[in-house]
Image (tube, rainbow, N blue to C red; front, side):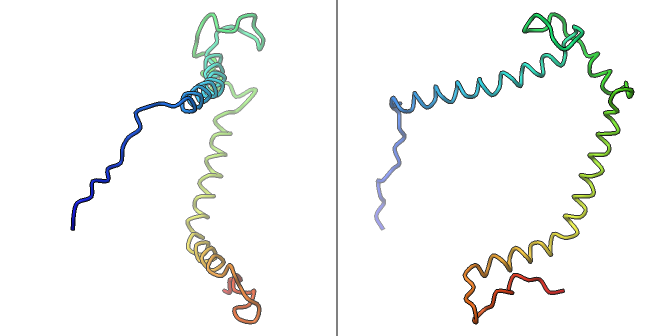
Length: 129
């Protein structure tokens, strides 16, 4: 068998369409990332109050996070965190317990997508105990 000289050539030139798409992607990424970075930055803000006159915080502190984890008078964050983890653990255990039955149901319903009445019947997706 003869060797073929069909090699895949890489594109070295950027077209105008490629440049426009990349500029749009950069603009969209800035639009998405800046609000998230700003929220994280103001979570470390040292000034009191919800509304301040400056866009950027004047001082940074960890006191907000210390208050979040220690002050249970307004919001018991650790109890809420434990409740969510309990629900998550129970959901995972139930999923693992029923995984094989679920896979069987998905397989049985997926293998008969074109049921013809009288040949296979429409009850092929019904699980019988």
